[in-house]
Length: 150
Image (tube, rainbow, N blue to C red; front, top):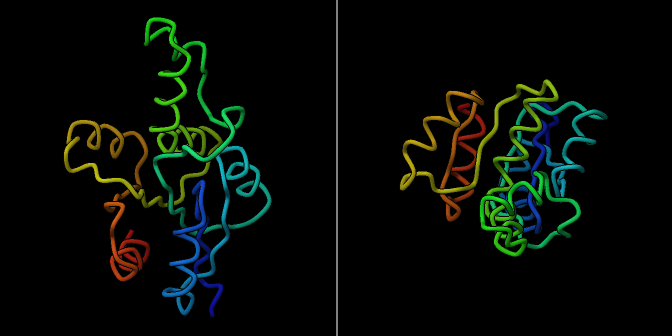
């Protein structure tokens, strides 16, 4: 294993970290963060060359979700359950925004299929470059290529 490229994997499970460690440890060193606050803390304490970021965070405590639940609930007629689900479904975007706001401009590869959302992706790419995405079912080889190519 080489530590030439250190990747922060931000996911609420451990699937990506396990897969990437198993198939890509010859090129990358991986550290996992389970939520946005943990990712921000790790970025302050260690050097990372890339971030691999999941979009959906439905296995974390609502208290660690980035984004304002009350303000988001207003968008859903005051429904806190729909607001929480929205924050979970889009947490990766909130994490990316927080990373950029904190001054971390390292390349990010999203695990989310933005093919059906070209306008949203174009906006995110413009605002948060350098950033790429891969569908959730991307192979380890595709992820390796994306992490090396960004």
